Image (cartoon, rainbow, N blue to C red; front, side):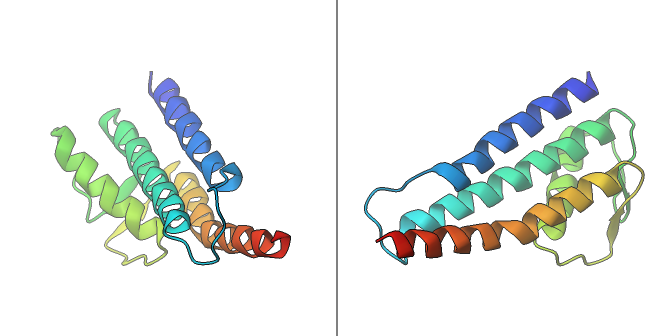
Length: 133
């Protein structure tokens, strides 16, 4: 059950990231509010997707986060802590109060890699569209 939930979440996140790579936003402006919202939407989708993966694992008694994270049986407390950890990992701040363990290291590494790549992809996309005009 846990694996199937994680696969569904990954499928939805990939679909959202596809929006960042392929979506044309109509009339082109180098600095556009529409471009900003595409990037914001992608960040929020990745943040929520990974936080749900961490939450599903923790609620299934698969430890993925340790440190300042105290697992409790209440779903919303676990989700809140997972969202915090996901945001800190995605934006590469890494306060050190929570850290990944076990398979969580793999999830955190992938999330950090996506967090590094998204602004680069966004800029490449914007610059390449500017060259077409």
